Image (cartoon, rainbow, N blue to C red; front, top):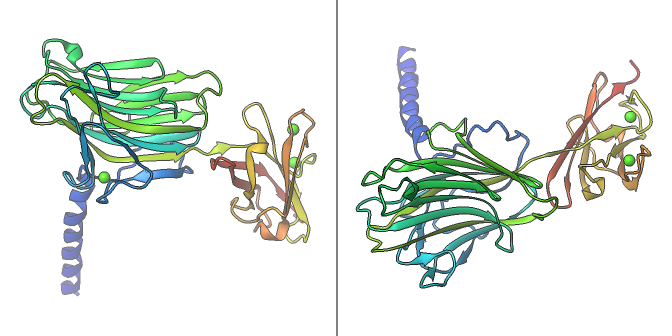
Length: 368
Ligand SMILES: [Ca+2]
Ligand SMILES: [Ca+2]
Ligand SMILES: [Ca+2]
């Protein structure tokens, strides 16, 4: 018995020894504790950069600079070519390499961790490292620029600028030590339709963001599509040794859209006999902020957990006579898994753009 116990304890110690350094590792899969993220969110994409090549979602726009997935395994490294490069070509500057990741959706949260190593040795040139979200036409939505310059006594030459739309916040660093220390930044960009917020933290603790910038764009001006762009540039002097930025992961999750549903429109309480062989009508209501016609009815489920029954019929109709056309769906009661004594039923689904929706309404089962 003691022997078995000793083996178990020994094994436990080994497990702890193995697990603990991984948890503390910089290359963690820490989806950081974010008060605004819903636990119900759906992944749009999740790049951990553990493979030898970029996932096919990335588009490479050629230019000066380079990237590597092997220099620091588990990270996407962007290496700046600071020999007169800029985002676009012109005025004696060569276009820099862009790494571009398009994605769709108008309600999402992007999370990334970036480790900047902007000037590992002699401060011989100016460098910018840019992480941006842009519209397909290149208009900026939000971004973060880490800059270092040769003018060590000018605080503005060692700064981080983060912005949402035209609202920017600048973080000044002390006069550049040489070399600059590594900086690990947690960055989050959130889009809720027209409103975009960027949050950042570099204190190593990711539960609170010290830097926030937010902006509300003109209604409808952002559209449904955008792209991530990673790009670095610089000027003056040699680029030896190069500055670079390591991306631990880039992940985008879509927020669930809460929708108002009405089980048995026009009646309350919503009496349901779980053994009935009939159907339950459920309306997804349209209001000022949500248009039920954007729901892909074939994705809708309804029942005890909102994952059970698929609709047997649906139609567009103003069920509550408020002038907004709602979606009315019918589900077979026996497929909903609703049980005697349940007090709520749930509906889930997706919009035609693939954004998840979720709604809940009260029920009263009969017979009592
Ligand atoms: Ca990684
Ligand atoms: Ca009702
Ligand atoms: Ca209505």
